[in-house]
Each structure stands twice: as structure tokens, then as C-alpha cells.
Image (cartoon, rainbow, N blue to C red; front, side, top):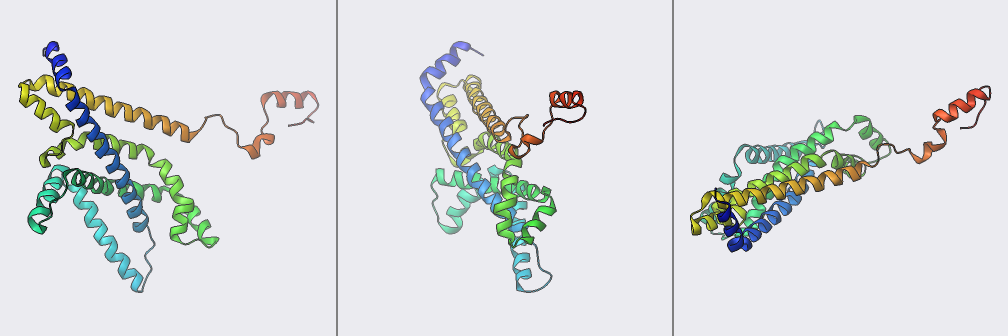
Length: 260
């Protein structure tokens, strides 16, 4: 590898790399946010208790079957194939010419939604059943229980997995070059095709991918720590009930009588 060529490629084509990296971040961020909302919605629907009889049972069975097909299909096929089918298939089958950026966000969103739905469902199942029973005991229905009791806890629990999906999407947007979305990989191919220095060009791209994923990971970990709060906190209602070693020693010297 020629370091001089790396410097030359960056100086001559820096704007192309920046545009590609910016579009990569935009697609992955919007796709992860929309996909997370899709996952939350599907996770709530798939955990609705199915009654033993009645029309509601049949409707829920059909809905769950459709959602299962959606999840299995998008988790079981590569995103590059999904991009080809959705973008070119919509043009051939329905004569719909999709905007490439809109198609890219749509593809990443529904792909992320399939993975996030299982993550959310696992997070909901992990919540103690006693909380569901307590919420139902005070008159909450399933939706109220989810949004007031369960999902606030689930959102915190799945934050690391959501961040991991974001990082994965940053890297997986590279497959969208098959529908000519000018993200970082597409721009790097254009640069390499112009100067015929493929190794140096993709070396620059790899550094940019690493910077993006590393930065996002650090930001998300900081957010997690902020949500967790300090390790040595004391609940306000229990402050007067906590006995320190100094209090214990003082109480012993006073013959077992002391103030907390």
C-alpha cells in the first residue's frame, strides 16, 4: 500500500467519501428508528393473550401467522436479495419507480423491524408475570399494561441490542449499492474506478466505517450508563433507614440504643 496514494485519494475525493458516509449514517439511523417502532408494535401484538374461543381468537391467529411469515422471511433472507426484490420487483410487477433513498430506508426499516420484533418479544417475556397480574388487578387492559408498566422496562433492557442493530445497519447499508444508492461503499467503488487504486480506496472506506461504528458504540454506552444511574445510589424513601458502620458502632457504645 502506498501512503502517498492514500493521502492523494483523500485530498482529491474527500467530499465523495464524506457524502457517502453521511448518507450511510442517515439511512442506518432512520432505518433503525423506524425498525425499532415496527419491532415494538409487533412485539406488543404478538404477546396479546389469545382467548380460548370467539372471533377475536381467529383474528389474532391470522395476524400472528402473517407476522410470523414476515419475521421469518426477512430474518431468513439476505438484505441484498431483499433490496433487489423490493426495488426492481416493484418496478416490474407494479410499475412503481421507487426513489432510491426512500427504497433504501424502507428496506433497512423492515429488515430491522423483523429482528427487533423478536428482541422486543423476548424482552416482554422476560418481565415477571406478577407485574402483568398486578396491572390487570387494578383494571388495566393489555395495551395499558404494555405502555405504562412493561415497555418502559423493556426499552431499557433492549437498548444494547438496539445499539447493536444500529451498528450492523451502518455496515449492511453497503449492500444497497446494488440498487445504486450512493452510500459509502458505492462512492468508494466510484473513486476506485477512477484512479484504479482499489486497495487504498477501500482502506480509506474501512477507516470511515470503523470511525462511524466506534463513535456510535461509545455514544450508546454513555447513554446506557446515564440511564443506569450511579452504582451507589440510595432510594429517597430509604435514606433514614440505612445504618452505616459508624451508626452501628455508636449504637453499640450506647448500650444498644442509638439513632439511625
